[in-house]
Amino acid sequence: MKIINPATEEVIKDVEPTPTEKMAQYHGHALQAQKQWAQVSINDRLKVLDSYEKRVKDQRDELARLLTLETGKPISQARNEVTGSLDRVRHLKRYAHKWLESEVLSTGDVLEFVCYEPLGVIANISAWNYPYNVGYNVFLYALTAGNAVLYKPSEYATLTGLKIAELLEESGLPGHLFNVIVGDGSAGQQLLELPLDAYFFTGSHRTGLEIAKSVAPKLVPLQLELGGKDPLYVMEDVADVKQAAINAAEGAFYNNGQSCCAIERIYVHEAIYQDFVSHFVSAVKGYQIGDPMSEQTFIGPLTRSEQLGVFEKQCADALAKGAKLLLGGKRIQGKGFYFEPTIFVDVNHDMDLMKSESFGPIIGIQKVTDDSEALGLMDDTEYGLTASVFSADESRARTLLDQLDVGTAYWNCCDRVSPNVPWSGRRHSGLGSTLGASGIRTFTKPKAYHWKN
Ligand code: NAD
Image 1 (tube, rainbow, N blue to C red):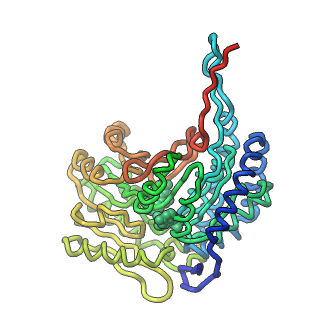
Image 2 (cartoon, protein in one colour; image 1 turned 90 degrees about the vertical axis):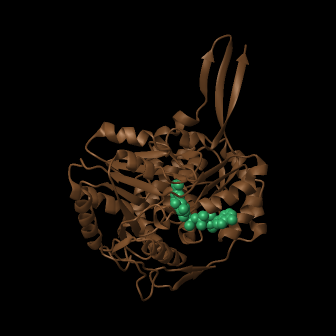
Image 3 (tube, rainbow, N blue to C red; image 1 turned 180 degrees about the horizontal axis):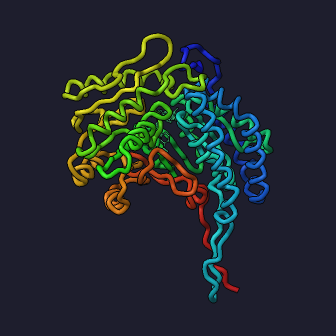
C-alpha cells in the first residue's frame, strides 16, 4: 500500500497491509494479554498513559511533521492536534478511578453493588482527519478500562497509527494489547470477520451503515461516530458582525473543512446578511494557501484526491440551480490535491451543497428572515452531530438549540470537542457516545451484585 504525500503526490513509503492470518494471530494473543491487563490496577494502567503523555510532548514536532506529511494538515494545526489531544489523557488521569471502580448502590438487607468489567478485545476502525483526537477517544479509553484493541487507522493516517503503537510500547504498555492493522477498507472488512467483543467505528455514514449490517448478528456492542452537515445560524443581534464572520469562517475552513463538526452551512438573519457575507469573504481571502509544512499556511491540500471531484460536482450543481459563487470554485492546478476555498450565496436546500456532507473548503450561506425559518432549515437534514447559534441573547439561542435533534449544541462557539462532555451523533451522525462521564464506561460492561450475608 502506497502512502502518498497529498501536497506533492509523491510516495512517502510502501507499507505491507496486514494479512488476514496475522489479524487472527493478533486476536489470539490479545485474548491472553487482555485477561492479564484486566487484573492490572487502574493506577498502573494510568502510569502507562503518564509516560505516553511525556513522550508525545517530547516528540511533538516530529509527530506533527509526520501527520502533516501523510495528511496534508497544516503544520501549526498538526502541532495543535498532537498536544491538544493530550487533554484526553489528563481527563482519564483525573476520572478513571471514579468511573471504573465498583459502586455500592444500596446497603439494605441485601448489599447491591456494580462492577465495571472490560469488554474484552475490541476493534477500533478509525478516520484520518484527526487521528490523535478521534483515535484517543476510543483506544486510550478502552485500554484504560482494561481492554485490548485491534486498531485500524485510516489508510490515510497509517504512519501516525504505527508511530502511536511504538510510543505506547515504549511507555510500558504490555505486548499484544494494542495491535495496528494496516490497510484500507478491505482490511477493515476482514477485521469485522473476527469474533471480537465490540466494534468502535469513526468515519462516514456510508461505511458505518455497512459495518452495522455486518456485525449486527454478533449481538455485541457497536458504536458509530459518523459525519455531519452541521449548521450555524447567525442572529441579527450579534455583538460584532465582523467577529462573528471571522469565527464562522474558521469553523468552516479549519483543517480545510475536514472536521466532522466543521460548519457545513450557514444561515444569516437578513438584517446583517450583507455585512456578514462581506466580512466572511474578507476573512477567507486572508487565508494563506500552500505548502502545509509552512508555518503561515492555513489551507493545505485535501487529504484524499477523490474529494476534488466531489466538490466540483457540488459546485456545478449549485451553479446550475442558481447559486452565486463569491470565491473559489475550482481545483488549483499543479501538484497536490488543492481546492480553492469556496463560498456560495443565493443557495437553497435543493442544492447538494446544503444537504450532503462536503467535508472540505466549500460553504453555502443562506439568508433567513426569522428564527423559525432558520430552525426549519437547520433541522432539514438526516444528520444530527452539532448545531451552533451566534447571538447576544442566550435564551433565544437556547430555545432554538433545544429543538434540534443533535448531540452537541454550541452558543457563540463552534467546531470544538471537549473530553468533559459526551461526544455523540444522532440519526445519520452515529450511535453511542464517547468522552464525558459515560465515555469510559462505554468500554465496560456492568455486572450487578446482589450480596446477602
Ligand atoms: P471512511 O468511512 O471512508 O473510512 C473510515 C475507516 O473505515 C477507514 O479506516 C477505512 O479504511 C475503513 N473502512 C472503509 N470501508 C470499510 C468497510 N467496508 N468495512 C470496514 N472498514 C471500512 O471515512 P473517512 O474518510 O476515513 O473519514 C471521514 C468521515 O468520518 C466523515 O464523514 C467525517 O464526518 C467522519 N468523522 C466523524 C467523526 C465523529 O466523531 N463523529 C470524527 C471524525 C470523522
